[in-house]
Image 1 (cartoon, rainbow, N blue to C red):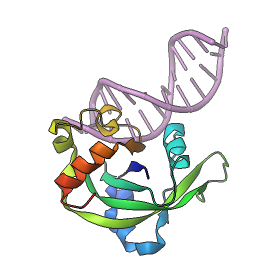
Image 2: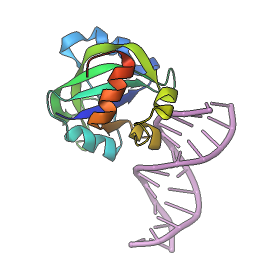
Image 3: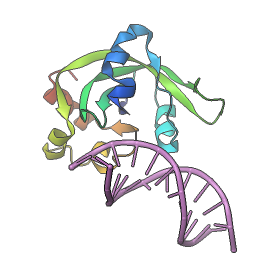
Length: 139
DNA sequence: GCCAACGTTGGC
DNA sequence: GCCAACGTTGGC
């Protein structure tokens, strides 16, 4: 089971929106970047990911679960783009900020820090454990 | 609001 | 197939 990180601007689609959908979840639509799309295509149902608020907050706020593998993005006619569906699994007890990640030993290699523009990215199992610890949730 | 980093497009 | 121009993302 792989680990991921999803970025979204909270003004557009934040944790509160995601949580409001409950177990029904929502498409992670709108991705128009090949690397990000390919990461979604690699996801399996049951994979989990961090939910990151970009721009506003700049912090990881919770964990989502993949509940449907990548399928056509309903917001475009272009068959090139597809996306997974995710549901909110649990919020962090304490959000983990980008600044915290930057200075935290063990997170130097995080894609979040080294490729700030990639909106859907892989997270290693070590990074996952460290960040869950900081966030106050079970890995 | 600025701008650096990165991805994409299109002329050659 | 190179690369300049342009657009977008996202940290600051």
